[in-house]
Amino acid sequence: MKRSRMPTSDLDRVGMMAVAVAVCFWCLPGLAASTKTIVEGHLADLSLRVITCATHPCLGDEEDETSKLLADQIVTDGLFYYSDINVAYPETHGSLRGVVEWEFSDGSLDVISFKIVDFRSSTAVLISEIERTLPDCEIERDDEAGREWSCFATGLQGNDVLVEIYLAPNLVILEVGS
Image (cartoon, rainbow, N blue to C red; front, side):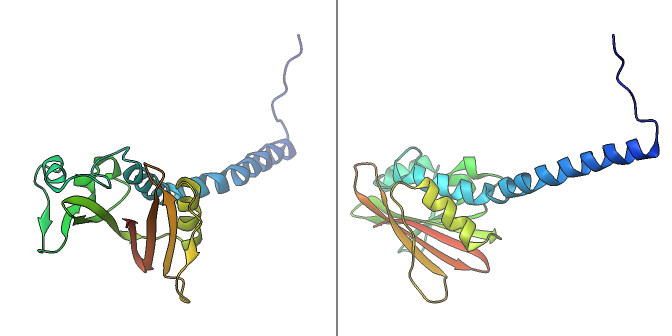
């Protein structure tokens, strides 16, 4: 039986340290990239779920049904309705912070607007996640400054759903609906 040899010289120890450092440098960029896309991924996934009604409230839900679902934790200014995003979609707790704006038309939910605060992501990462997640979404820039973007995604019944993105420092507004 052959015994494995432990490093005995300083050169052997340095060699093992160099391998350990190389492994860390090789692994860390992937870990950093994966944590960087968590917030963007959650926002993209949430958009997909409200477009396809995999979660509720979603596009097309009735006004009174939405109010009951949110346990009346919804306020209005007479024009739009608002809720804390973590109340409306508990799965976002810990990843997204902000408000959801609900726009009803003829008694059903027509537009859902996510207003996310403390958003510190690059535009490219957010756009990439949205395009990767939403069916048939090919995002186009709507202004010269690169703060407004939009696309059409495929809805629950195969219909086109408008998706609009508005960016400002530490804030993103993502709207889905007509």
